[in-house]
Image (cartoon, rainbow over all chains, first blue to last red; front, side, top):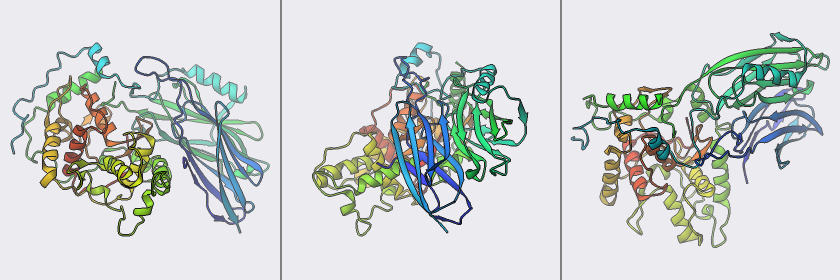
Amino acid sequence: MASIRLSVPDTAAKGEVIEIKALIRHPMESGFRRDSRGETIPRDIITRFECEYDGQTVFAADFHPSVSANPFLTFYTTATVSGTLTFRWTDQTGRTWSESAEIRVT
Amino acid sequence: MSLPISRSLKADTSGLTRRGLLAAGAGTVFVSAFPFPAGAAPEDMKAAIRKAFGKGELRDGRVSINTPPIAENGYSVPITVRVESPMSEGDHVREIGLFSPRNPVAHIAHYYLGPRAGRAEIATRIRMAGTQDVMAVAKMNDGTLWSAARETVVTLAACVVL
Amino acid sequence: MRRLGALALLALSACGPDMAKGETGFETPQSGSAFLKPDTRALQSDDFANPGFLWVDRGEALFARASEGGPACASCHDGGEHTLEGVAARYPAIDDQTGELFNLERRINACRSRHQGEPPLEHESEALLSLTAYVAHLSRGVAIDVETGGAARPYYEAGREYFFTRRGQFNLSCHHCHDRNWGQSLRGDTISQGHPNGFPAYRLEWESFGSLHRRLRDCDTGVRAAPYPAGSDTYVALELYLAARANGLAMESPGVRR
């Protein structure tokens, strides 16, 4: 299901610095909240984000409990060749979600 | 137009007790003014920075942080970090760390960049357990560490479920 | 206990005699977004970063997917004669078949049982929230225009009565905050006029997306009253009164609220 939103330009000039935005649906349960019975709600967070472009990891991030629910990230990369950008999120248990976008470099 | 309740507008709050409030607030999750209780102290933040970046000297400059001066609440505060750098093979940012002097875990997030980024800038949204000076530290390819801090006032919500 | 103090002060200030603007306390309705800080407003108007679109996207996918027992929503509502653009702005509305008041959630569930051979979805379930988000989003920018006469009248009156009735340990009605004290500060918040046009909405405090009824439950709990279940007749009637009170105000769903 659609629970990832990506913003990647369709086309870019070679060498152009492009803005990338990525949003994924996830509660980022911090592990510090309690329910109405006073019991701690277990931590459930995404811990790693990676963006691969042209076979290389061009950007990565580690998330901790202070990252807001439904993590949102803006970053930049240089357009080098036409191809696929792959975005991958991994949670604390190793479960992953990924999505990709095509870019045409002229 | 006449109002059914406009005649007697007196509030009687004498019967309020903490126990009554606790019972009234029973839901699945307690919602508070902050996403989580304050936990860390400024010393914890310093320790977290050391753990992430080692013992090198933290210099002021090159890093700038943008956050709203006053945040609506602490659940989702927008933050942008920029580092002055040509982002060339010979001179670029390798890592950016975000740190809190007040949240229960001082290390907020860590970003890994390289010359291919073209621009040393990230934006995200973070949780804040109250008013604080969030800190950003950047590590360059020559190993030098640069930092900046920025205060955000987190306001207290009135109508919270308890 | 400082929080109690703030609400108690509000209760006392609600004793003022200013009824010049009629029972609603405003001449033209102002959206809840007008009472947000600029950064929250900016998040709502950013069609990429607004997290509510995660639910709209999912709703759009569900809308297009064929059900097991029948056609997809999109096979009837294909943008032609049965387009849903602008429809949400006229809800809650009377259902012709039963004569009962339906909000969007009830309409979607009625469609499922009448045309798709599917069981109803639970209120506040991910699927119903997502479908409601998608359908409400199709009316973004359209002015609310609900019917309050005819068969809708008793529901409107019931909703109005709820709005004006004091409840809970704080002994406050909706009217006290949202007609008589909107624009005033209550700790870090500015009290809004209490309009439904941003819902279903993403609330920062929920860190998630929710229906108007979930918001109403928080309001009731906020004044220390026992909330009604989401989807209850009481809240559907209140929803009609709130919509009528906001008639003319542009729909904003997926809104972002604090």
